[in-house]
Image (cartoon, rainbow, N blue to C red; front, side):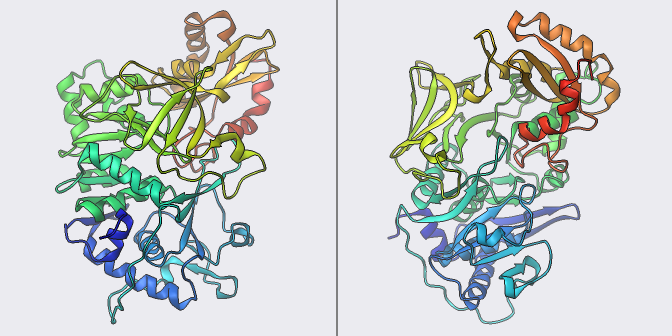
Length: 503
């Protein structure tokens, strides 16, 4: 009898049913998970023919697609470690493989280059034409690592972290315990598969027999209507965009029933619940989805911890990110810092990071200092107040938490994102990303005055800059998880930020 979920799903074709549904701008296609398993055997044989085997590392630099899934499963079956590179963050550079100690790099960019050990995904043999040999089922230990995942890079260069089998198994088990995914569930994912969390849902489908729909962020809304999922996995910015679409340009004449109808039209008729995390969700957005009959559950976790807490149908509290899941414990230090303790830690150090980075966050075995500030209520629900990094110390010694100020700006319908900077430890300035037409941004001065009227004197924003176009992944101002990249935004708008006039 095998010990880990990964061992079970890699040992033989799934027997519980389920399909992989692939969504693109051209439509959706279905593939039984049994066929996905067999096709991954073909890819595994190809990896072996390249001389790859246990202990080797390969890189995948590509958008979401069937080949990404097959490569990942094939590597797992051969105990080859994968490094998932987000195409919005990494480029196909000559030194990419050497930089991360990779034996081979697979990509949807460029051309095959066997001499440099680079292969295109389109060249992978994924068909079922010939004889498929049996792959010996892998045996894993809890401390074995299967993938290198990278931080979002919203505040600096991405750090690489090798994730253990024990942490993956613990997360899959804890989530299944509270959500009970299975037939006829269809879990919808569209964030890059380079994020290990997104691959969890592929593994979950193989383990528990539900469908999983894989799309890209470009095709997400089109695919939603065709795939009709029961669960949508998304970051707050995605659900905020969907809310604006449902509400339309004017909500004055829309009653609750009409909004419910528009919500069901966008997300489909089968929604059981919506899953969000990765960044704080606005209370207005969470309230909206509850009002239109789509339960939404916020959670909390980091690359360095996997999922830690989650609201769910059995235990949910407004404003919180849920209670700790099985295998996790949250400790609040004297200064309000959130520390996570794990029975099965992701790791105890970064694999690729600047000197001193590991010691800053991995403070003891199984213990991670998150950099977030929060508190636990009497029932163990975790409330996140902000980040240590988001606390600005002014020249008068006053400490300002900028997250609430940014949230006040985002309450305006035409503001998609707000990023606050502090110049010379004195002046607070804001960069606003428009949600739609710039015509609505004409009264930005009035908006700033309204927000300042609700703020303490030291929290006053002295100037606002409205971006010429919305922050996006394509223009390099959002991460793949739709988080603003503060450094890039500052560099892009530095001259306007330092100007002494409203911009």
